[in-house]
Length: 111
Length: 112
Image (cartoon, rainbow over all chains, first blue to last red; front, side, top):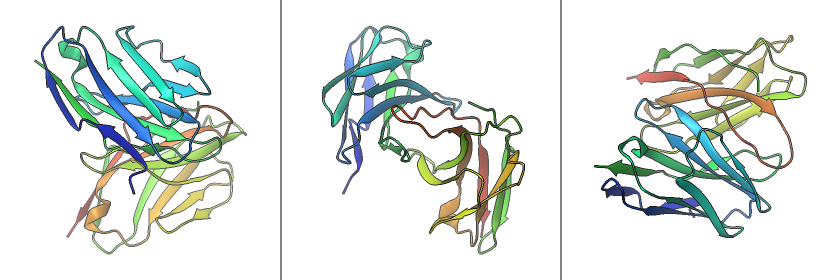
């Protein structure tokens, strides 16, 4: 049983395109997140979404936008993709007072 | 959140105990110590957390010094599958979002 799942696992696209990464959690958690891991393996939080409250890391460009159709999903939309957006993106979820569960990651390559 | 300092890398022989240290000298009274690990090409995985008492679960033990300025994660019998980057994170246990700020971690290599 997959707790946090992401699709696709790999995404290769060209500069300037718009793409989305989907995330679903079946843990009943009330908070979901997106993290980015760059080529140097630094793992940084991008967004957290809790009860319709979005907290954005100030360093994230506004080309990135999370969208939550319901409590179990937090999709990541990226507009006008740039070379520097190439990274592995991890979705995660947690409930207050519990540990955070991460998805398997989506490797995005922008050419 | 308080800053943590970890060695860049460590080796451990298979079957031996792996002891991973973490310094968090600026930890606040309400901050917990969390440990996560990331096995190659996978998402980070929660291991254990504690406030001031030592903790043990099926994966590991966490030893926190009395002054709480440092801690040690112990994998009692390391296996090859424990090869990963281990992250020590300190943060409050709070309601709402549980944002995690990862440092560079310790790359543990378990050697056959």
